[in-house]
Every structure is written in C-alpha cells, then in structure tokens.
Amino acid sequence: MNNKFFFPAALAVVAFLLWNSCFVLSEGQQAVITQFGKPIRQLTEAGLKFKKPFIQQVHYFEKKILIWNGDSNQIPTNDKTYIYMENTARWRISNALLFMQAVGSETRARTLLDDILDGTVRDLVNKNDLIEIIRSSDWSRDFTDSTVQHAPEDMKKPKYGRDQISKMVVAAASKITPQYGIELIDVMFKRVNYIDTVREKVYDRMISERKRIAAEKRATGEGQKAEILGRVDREFREITSNAKKQGLEIRGKADAEATHIYAAAYNADPEFYAFQKSLESYRSVLGANSTLMLSPSSDFLRYLQSPRKP
Image (cartoon, rainbow, N blue to C red):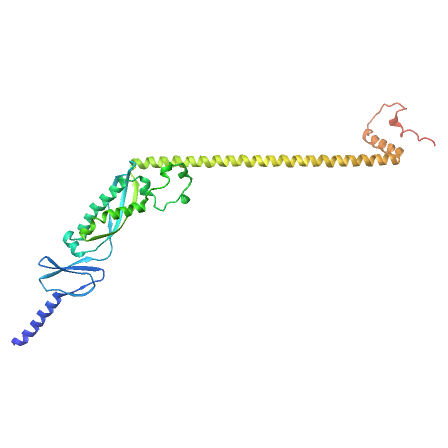
C-alpha cells in the first residue's frame, strides 16, 4: 500500500519540479533570471530554458522595437513663434538586465522617455527658427511655388531642416538612454501646429499672399489680353488696308480697261456710239409722264427728228 501511493506521489513531485524549473522563451522576448531578487543571468535567445525551481524567478522583457508617443507640448522657436508639437520615437530594450535594474518596466521607461525626449526636443526647437522645424532637409527651390521668391534671402533655404534636427535629437538623447538599457532608434516630428493666436495671423498672411498672387495673375492676364487685342486690331487694320488698296487697284484697272474699250468703240464708229449714248439718255430722261421744253436746234433732239437725207 505504501509503494502504491509513494511512486505516484514521487512522480507528481518530480513533474511539479520539472514544470517549475523549465520555461519557454518566445521569439521577440528576452528574460532576466533572479534569485532572491538578485539578477543571476540574462537570456536573449528563444527556446526551452531552465532555472532552479522556487528560488529563481523569470522576468520577461520585449526584444522587438517599441513605440513612444509624446504629448502635445507648446514650444517657442528661436524666432519667437509658439507652436504645438507632437513627437513619436522608436526604441527597444538593448540590455534587459540593466533595464530591469535602472527602470523596471515599460511603463516606467515611457515616463523616462517623456522627460528625456521632451526636454531634448524643446532645447533644439528653442535654438532653431520655425522654417527649420517645418521644411524637410532635402528641400529644393525646384519644388517651391513663386511665393518663395518674395521671401527674405535667409528664409529661402533651411540650414538644417526637419530631418536633420530629428537626427540631432536622437544623437543628444542617445547619450542618456544607454545607461537605462534603452536603445533609441529614431525620433520623428509627428505634428507641428501653431497656437490659436499665431494661427489666425498665419491664415491672414496666407490669404493676403494668395490675393496678391491672384492680383498679379489677373494683371498679367489683362496685359496679355491688351497685347492680343492690339495685335488683332493691328492685323485687322493691315488686312483692311491691303484689301482696300487691292480693291482700288482692281477698280482703277477696270475703269482704265473700260475707258480703253469705250475709246476703241468710239473710234471704230463715232456716229453709232453717239447714237447709242443718245438712246440711253432718252431712256433715263423720258418717262411716261415726262415733259421737256427744248429748243428745236438742241442736240438732244437730234435723233428724235426726221432722219437726215443722205
């Protein structure tokens, strides 16, 4: 009877000890084993792992990249423009043992990053003008509209640009984070916005600038319109003048040719030509109710009198 219960109990105890002494470290995780609260060793490779049962404990930490999102803060730039900034960063636990000793948890790490990154971002934003925060580092005049041509010379191209300042933030913060077992990968400006009072002034300036550009476009259009209308009117006058000139030349040539024909006809038979012209005159002067008072010796009645004898 004793053996009957002893072996199952012994197997249960062994199984319990084995279950408490082994664990699986998943991919994307790292762990620190402590004994009575004191760190013993650090594990970074995934797989089946072992520890002393009961007296040792396993503390798990993420090995993958984590996201930090900062709160929206009001920050003044070097040119005294107040803006709201929202930043984000990527980080990971590079040394789990150091992280557990210095920080303890991811929640505490995010609070720590709030202090480090917000302070670093504020310091660099205070030292740079607004143009450096807004424009990208690879800004080019080729991709800018005509409004930049009216900006002051020192405002046309940023000295660093948003991307370079982000790298400067990473470089400055990375001098602090390693002592907490944290590796900072990058920092990005997620959102930049003006405060309400500045935003209204910016909108008014933008509206005024767009109105000025629209007025320039309209003035340019009116000038082009006047130039086109002047060119059309000049061409119209040239065409009309040439047409009149050609018409007068054709009419002069026709009159000269008609005169030549009339003269040739008159010279061919002057008597018949005089007779024909007289008939045309009778047709145009004498009507149904016409009355003429003429002298009998008038040439107008020459062909209305009796024909002459040869």
